[in-house]
Image (spheres, one colour):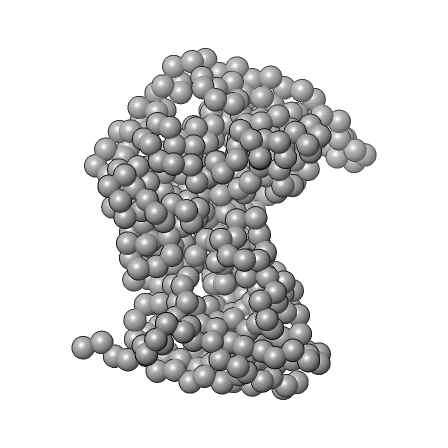
Length: 451
């Protein structure tokens, strides 16, 4: 018999509903006057542990506050009706216990304190995440499908066009940079920026690839020479490469990208599923492979180390590329999207993009979605793995990230959670804690790989 969950409702809790372009929910502003804390640095608990959440006001607030509980990305409902567990709370200047709970089963929980519908503060936790598993199994012909795709990609010769980019001041003395276009047999070419130290000896530099988050017109979608240059400066120097997911040209007026977003690339992430060949992410992943083929052809590459690093959609791309090519030796996947599309089959929110929910449990979903699921690709790479999970991330749910991590076959893997991390970052009051813990560990991992 299952043990009942014990709950004590008090007063207050934390976060904003994902203020990010991938958010599936109505966006809310951070309720800055409310500070929420939890009795765990990383928000990870074992079954039977007592979770305690405290709330306090950092400045006076004349609005009524309510607290809402979310389980596995969904509202938690009372057994006597359909009203969500939303209760009024009161907070003062001193920390006050507002929520205490003991779970005897695996759960991911978010506690939100809000002032109306437009402002919220959140904190999250996860119980026994090591027991989570993806909703899909790896299809029997998974790697055969992708091996065929790679073979078709490489039937055509690779051609690259490089245009020198002028760097400023000291950077120009020590580094060189280029805008790069790499041919593809179908779809748009690879387009991005390449940077590396000047005077680099042959076979002396690792590769540091950066993959981009979802969207079309936003700043976060574009490749930047500054990002490639930053990558080139890491460790003892690297071949830095930053490219956009769609293969569109960089450096054009913003109106061009807005038109793409509203036209040719409108709703690219949620287009109807027809077959494996026509799904949008197939070409996105092949474009990554083409970029890798080019970078590995450079005489400066040491022939040993390739780090791919991305967040959100970029994290999903990083997982896919690692599973598709054994030359990837290290991966940083931060709050990865396109991961655990079958989460709904495990009674939790599935990996972004959310509209795939309607396909996940269908025959069509079963026949297509696993082939682009990051949780499947992680079962085909032994690359070193560094993953980040945000416990108040409503876009790329923590349960999906941990489920994928648990089946990753890498012998050297680590996952870092943060109770105050939403999809696009942390709550401002917790920035220093983030920088001193997860942020620092990520930087150390990158520099160790590239040193």
